[in-house]
Length: 341
Image (cartoon, rainbow, N blue to C red; front, side, top):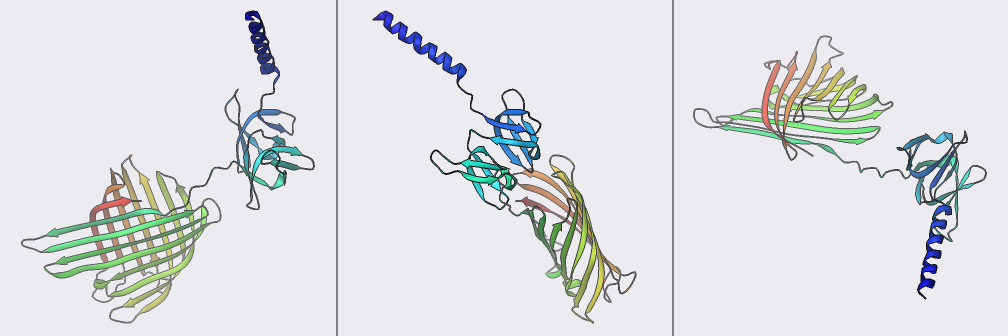
């Protein structure tokens, strides 16, 4: 009995070794048009490049157009050009087709090779608005009673080829009970990228200031732009276009005329915690050569953690032909906090 058990164990062990040697090793398979064969695990097909991992090398990337035959022993997710999603194991089929079987006993879905746009494409992150809220305030009492305040916000939504952005800033100051500063500026922008660096834009700029005789000044018009940098640590773009310009004055005759619009947007991460920004826009009057309005906003932001930062801003607002009794330039220096979201 003892020997019989040993014999049975020996037979089972031998069968295990034999089956382990001759049994097939299940793997995905790619055959190229030049006849090369690659076995491994299909990772993904994104933007026309198939990535397959193997035990004997790093990930291999293959141009999808160079593939003659494709087979998978594991379930994959095929994204088709018509927007449909098909899940299952891939089996070769004649006449440029792929047979996709979602499970045992399930009917095969026949997919034309040319209709495949992606395989196991990673889920795209939901697009969200990103931007910041910033504010600052001071209060002085004693010989002079002074209150100042600044509040602003900006946000942007990036939809790959389309980008939306909006921003506004309100400034307020009061000396000995008398309001000495009260103005609000804002911008809404839409960009559509024709090429990675070239885009068309539509801009709406607005400004109101009690002490500049302005109920409301606004401009709206199209333009073109060029994005030189668009990276996490640096950005730089230039824009130019034609706008309709309108000034609703508190006193005096209102104005409507055509202007050019030129703008730039710059940002640079100096260190891990310090960033500088500069936004510039100028409106040359096309009806009166030599007249123009410009605004420059410079910022220095120092990160203090958890999305918060200290912000130093300088704003320069200039009109070389202001209404009677109004100075040409205003300059503001603002110290406050910024919260990024």
